[in-house]
Amino acid sequence: MNKVRGRAINANTQNTNNFSMWMEPLSHKDYPVTYVANPTQNAVVTSNGVKNVVVAEPGMLYNQARLDVSGSVNPTRWTTGQTVNTVFLESAQMAQRGDAVANGTYTVASYSYTPKSNNSRIIVDYSALYRITGYNADEFESRILIDGTTLIAKRQQAYANEAGGGTRSGTLFPICGGITNNALGPRTISIILYTASTDPVQFYSQAYDACMKITEIAL
Image (cartoon, rainbow, N blue to C red; front, side, top):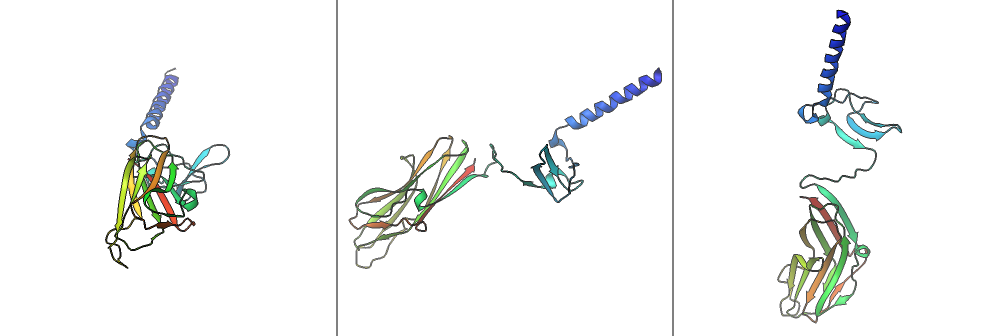
């Protein structure tokens, strides 16, 4: 009877030890990856049709393995500075104008971007081919507006008042700016040209004439 009782106590102790080991938070210790199928240098999360498996070199620690994923990754949280999303647009994808404009305020290009995170920064890079004719002392200004009102970037171009006079300032494009974002709703990005000159500014709208890059990074 005592022998049976001793075995029961030993079994209970062993179960308690096993429970403690597995319930210990992973952050407290480096656990080796012990499930091995076709060992490689990389950790792989995939599916064998029955369950998800991890494949790694025997004895490799979890923080030493590179992770390869056979499917897509769709995170909902990001670390500070991590790229959340990137969009690259050609002329036809962002309503790029391809005509000549003068003496007024014009939308050169626009695009509606929907953020992936509500705690991020949206960075807009825009570049376009343009040509200004004439030779008067003219000044032009380009801007990036968010949702029609928020100014995130401004550039100016001014010319000398003489025939053949070159620009005496920066140029209108490329232009870049950023805005802090805290919502998931669409944000309208507008590239604006302000001009009080009668000299026309010619824009072009072939795929290679203009582009916009939108980069969303986590805060």
